[in-house]
Structures are given as C-alpha cells and as structure tokens.
Image 1 (tube, rainbow, N blue to C red):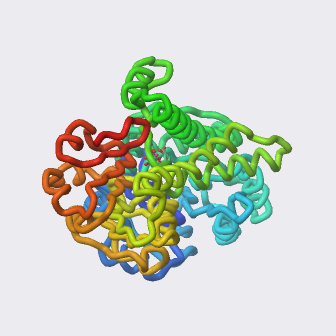
Image 2: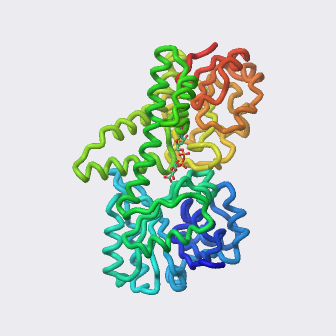
Image 3: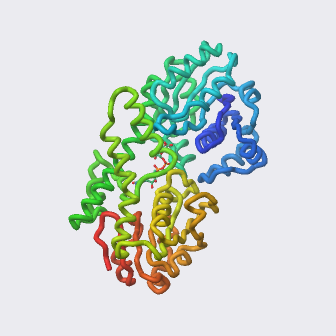
Length: 433
Ligand code: UGA
C-alpha cells in the first residue's frame, strides 16, 4: 500500500492499543511495545486486556502486520516512526509524571534511522521542547518531533480515531508535520496543523472546557432543584443554541475517568507553575468533587438523616457506561461514603469484574439490578447503563424495603416511576412520590 510506514507504538494501554490497531487498519506495519510481561503475552496469544468497542476485532483482523513485544530495541530497530503512548499519571501536586516518557526517549538513544518521534500521551505545554532537547542529547538531532494529542473517548475510541472531529498535529518542521499527516491517510476528519506547544495546549483546553460544561450544568441543576425548574427542559433548550450545542450538558453525580480529573488538575498545576491561578478551572474541579457528596446528602435527608442500619443498592460502578474502567469513578466516592456512614451496600455493574480493594471489598456484589435492590432501603443509579432502563421497575416497589430510587444520571422518567409507587429523586428535577 502506498504511504505504508513502519510504526513502533510505546505503551499498550487504552491509547497505545487503539492507536496501534487503527494504524494497522490504515495499512501500516505496527509493533506495540509494553513493559508489562503479562499484558504483552496476552496480546501475543490473541487476547485483549481492555474492553473497547471494536478493538478486539481490529486487532484480530490485522494480526499479520500488528505485533506486540516487550523488547524496546526490537520495536525500534525496524521502525520509521515511534509513537509515544505511555501514561503520564498525576503526582500528588497534580503535575504530570513524565518519567515513562523519559524512559522511552532513553531507549531511542542513537536510533538515527528514525524519521520522527511523535508524542500522543497527554503532557504539559513545553514537554515537546524538553523531549526535543533530550532527543538532541541522545544523538537524534536529525529525527523529527511532533505532538499528536488524542481526543478519543473510552468506549468509542476506535470510531473517534477513524472519524475524528480533527487530527491535531503540532510539529516544528513542515516535513515532520507532513509525515504525521500522511500516516493518517484514510482517517475521515480535518487536520489542524500548528506548533508543538499549541498542540499540547489544545488537548488540555478541550478537556477542561468539556469538564466545565458538565460542572456548569450540574450547578444549574442544583439551582433548578432549589427553584422548582426542570434541568432536562433547561438543558435541551439551552443546547438548541448552535453556539452552545447539546453535548456534555448531561447533569449527574459528576465526571470521572482517566482523563478529565487528571487533565484538569494537570492544567491547573501547569497554570500555577506559570504564575497564573486558573480560578474558573479550580471551581470546576471543586463543583465536581462536591457533586457525588451532594447526592449522598440528599439521599440521607430523604432517609431521615442517617444511613446507619440502612441498605443501599448501588447501580452502576464504571465511570461511564460501555466500559469496565473504574478510574476516578464517582461510584467509589459514593460507596466509601455510604459505608463510612454505616450503610450496607449491594452493588451491580454489568462489566466491572470482582474488585478486592476498598471500598468494594466491603460491599456485596449482585448479579442483577433487581437482586441488588431486593430488601434495600434505597437505590442509587450511578452509571447510566442502558440495561437499567429495562429493569422490571414495576416489581421494584414490592422487593425493596423502602421504595426509594435516587437516579444520579436522570436515566428514567419521573412520571413513570411515581406511577409505580416509587419515591423518585433525580438531579435538577423535583422529587416525585
Ligand atoms: C474524555 C474526552 O471526552 C475525550 O475527548 C478525551 O480524548 C479523553 O477524555 C481523554 O483525554 O483521553 P472519556 O474520559 O473517555 O473521554 O469519557 P467521556 O465520555 O468524556 O466522559 C467523562 C466523564 O464525564 C464521565 O464520567 C461521564 O459520565 C461524565 N459526563 C459526560 C457527564 O457527567 N455529563 C456529560 O454530559 C458528559
């Protein structure tokens, strides 16, 4: 195939695997390298360590030009382009820990045959300049450098990669920009070319604005509760303004996941390091920290002011539907809080496996939502799994000790719930009984 390249992807996490599999689908020869033996062996034997729509079939269909290795040297030896997709976890101060990126650059020492090194990991602005300097120091002065941040959402990552709103390419020389653009031939989306620092900033700004929209909506929801307005009507009509759009305005118990919490703290820390206090983003984070706690408080008030001796069914654990990812899931805060206040917690999730760590080790896992609600004094919907719409809600009032449902994602219809003799609480809407 014309334009086919040999790409070494460093990191077999969500981003690395999706990037590797999609580049293979586009016809490139791809090797994905990771340091975790178990993960690499699983991939080598045809397994896929994460749940991501369409990923397993993509890996299987392209197995003849998509391989996995533990050996960094082997991965780099034949590569033309190295994609860095390692994680950049937060340090206690909120700054991104870039040590894994430096480890990758170290393994590239003297790999002068490379055409380019591309960083996809989310990094603070200015990281590219530091990587460039480290590459120069490692004898790679003639190898190009680019930033190519990802905008894929979990559960839709393959689709987002192949049909993106935009592909952002930040490169300091036109040749490298052209090379990275060519790698994306076959991707259905516009390319936005810019300098490296701006590309790094686009990623952080986009996630911060999405998080801001959600926190804003959640605050509007709180005011709706206090004033008797219905946030669903409000959001629908506000979103019809094409300048605002309907997306990321779903109220709920807060945003979680591996990206928004980490990236918003990283941007706040980065601004602070640059001498600027990012006040709006600080509030956006605070509103989100409060959101699950507010839900718990409202439920507690409804139960007469205490969770002690109560049983609560927690429906949905993953940070969003369609994934088994529990990173920074609001459910963890909710379960911890319920347990610490003396409640017994019965939880259900269709994808998340058994968890031994706290708080989940102190909860009871149930096979179905109805089983979780049986005998419970309250149920709280934390993740909007579509399966929850299909629950036999007409049986729920009969099986619960007290027919109280808190819908933390506004998944269900209040009138229908009230007709089924349930006390139904939700976010930004009047409680119905
Ligand atoms: C997010 C972004 O959507 C992607 O564009 C980005 O590439 C990715 O982060 C990343 O930086 O890697 P993701 O974390 O997978 O993707 O999940 P989202 O679908 O964005 O949801 C994030 C959180 O916001 C979830 O907890 C979700 O429940 C919550 N959310 C989302 C709301 O509470 N309300 C909404 O209206 C939308």
